[in-house]
Image (tube, helix red, strand yellow):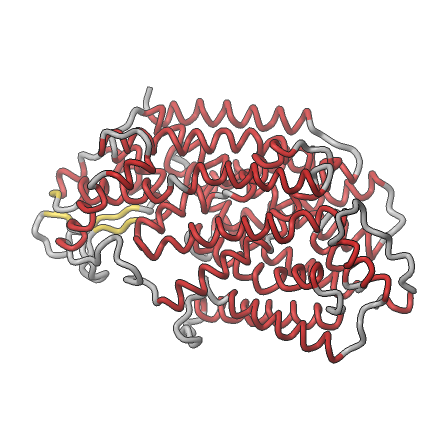
Length: 563
């Protein structure tokens, strides 16, 4: 069967599985909708967390950007994996012990402030919408190439599938669907990587093939011969400062992502939260230790297949013609010598490759069997849809739980709260679909922006909320606003309005680190210049870090102390 037929089979089978799980996991109460009844086993939550966190950026785009940047692309590996360790050890158990449904819930109660809650809601929605744009683009790319439909149609199909299991099952449906999606995506990532490693080096283990063969030396030599820097040369594409700040932004941004944090609310206890974090790290490592090898193999294969080929030879490559149709791959014989050449000079370069097609196209470039090519497509969809569903629920719960129930209608019944949550999922999907068709950048870049925004808004107030009982509502509100506004203006100015990276040349992906520092400084300074939190809040913070279970209620806080 051709690739398109295999893809159709895999996509239909996987989508039927997701729809079935969503139907079986449908819920009627708010606890099931928002935190899956807090009864998910640790290992299942670990797999769901891995799928939730390893988005289209990890599956589709990360290896692509490493393939383009070489050594400097390792910022994504270091930042994202290091950030998850930070989250697992520093934040997850305490947030689970706090026992709330959402990050704005924690911020609102810890800082005894509805204003703080609203600022956190705005930040959660802003971060989630930025993040989900990358997921929808990933869905569109997969459908565009492998089912030969336009990106807009592909995004629409993905929206319908996500809407079904997110609206029906809420967090419970999303959790068990993500367990299945993790299984699909990790199989789809490892099988092609192993096949390519075997083809190029004779070793089926990508990590060992990458470290123990001469393929990287060959790639370095090819790069130099073509006029590029060596693939493994450090700081060839980014300055040391930018590499450092981007890595930090990705790391602390991971620890501040609301859709990942909320996963630790779905387990039975703080102990289970720690175990599920350990399982998630193991599941994540399977992909992240494979990505550097796949990146190098993909670049080597692409150069070998495309560079210095005649236009006639290029036209005979079926996979190249199909990717050209998506407008994500383009060829232009600029010097009219009858050959297509890869050149470091962007003006003279004759091969344009979108970074987001590297992983998806690599099995075709390596001439692997059609079923493996189709499996990668199904894995890319699983990665994008799993994260998109988690992000959509964050947007839904931020409005339905933290605004509607907490602020507008505290007496809302269970059916009312769930209905508002489902309606908000629908609105969020529509917005996500628009950004999927009209994305502000390639997948990993868009997601990196979201990490920067999370680093600048949530991370400081969560850390200080757990470990500094003197931090008060005035400090938290001021810190979040300053961090979020500064980071947003810098990213938007540099990315969309032609502003030069004025802060020592730091890229938009790395500026979240500076926003985080500003947030910490403003929060601490303002907190020390204003009255301390109520005694009940300080006692709650002390108890939050104790080995006992449960957190005391804030009933001792008077109404006059809430803004």
